[in-house]
Image 1 (cartoon, rainbow, N blue to C red):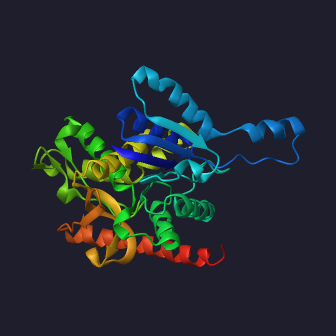
Image 2: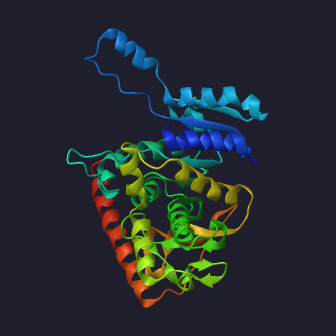
Image 3: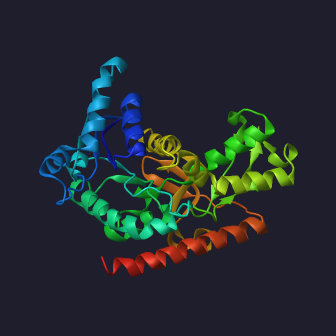
Amino acid sequence: MLNKIGVIGGGYIGGVLVQEIAQRRLAREVGLTDPAPFVNPNDPEEKQAATRKQSVAKGKTLDIAEGLPTLRSDVKVYGSRDYSAIEGAELIINTAGVPRKAKPDGTFPTREELLSINLKVTNQVAEGIRQNCPDATIISIANPLDAIVYTINKRLNPPKNKLMGMAGVLDSGRYCYFVAEAANVSVENVNAMVLGGHGDTMVPVRSSCLIAGVPVSKFLDDETLQAIETRTRKAGGEVVGLLGFGSAFASPAWSALEMAEAIIYDKRKIMPVCAYLDGEYGVEGMFVGVPGIIGKNGVEKVIELDLTDEEQKAFEHSAGVVRKTCDEVDEMLQDL
């Protein structure tokens, strides 16, 4: 158990995280921060006054705190409209960012299209961490995932093992679910790994996908596997389309908590993680999804898989897309 975990972002993911952290007793304290709501000066005075009193973070944490006695949990839960709520946190989980919403034509923006907006949010996040918990280990969920982690690194320059992104655990979980569903077996029997950027170029690694230790190709034909791999790449958008607003919230939160528990309990668990690469997989100076050992020191080791030629080519393409986005980040940061 940690003394304190800080959660940044009071949306659906942030709410699930605080609830689960308290219920699982992962820390003695959980602080949730969410920016104060925008007050429109053109609104009537009464509405302005009501808006000033609003606090998503305070409302959600009060609701959770009031329910903790039924769980016999003494975890202290509180929220704030500023970053004081995360002061002294040993672990930060960042969810702050604008979710994907439908465009006028009915389509949804890609994660990369959110970059210009969420980069400004991430600047505030980085400063909040710097002022309140500069030594914390950071797990970031906000999209576009790879670029946001890269931005936090540029702004804070923390030890590279203590900054990581959560994407691969979620993407791999989706891959496992689709395989188990198609093969009509328990999800507990499926082991799968998704590498690369968190977006349309992610790489489901078929050569490492096993059902009870048996290659997945023994259970499913090539056409079915191709359909599953395509669905895995589009899985986030599928959820968004069905919801009609926001994006996935339970599965990202649970995926981040799997990483958090590996750190808290020093599990040294192997899982896909958006980690800093220093030559591994032929990539330098970027955060990209790869297998890693996660323990009390964060990303303790990057593991290099023996990919097929096709998988290696796909990974290089995905890393190239991440590189292009990071180059855009560098340009944008000059104006912020």
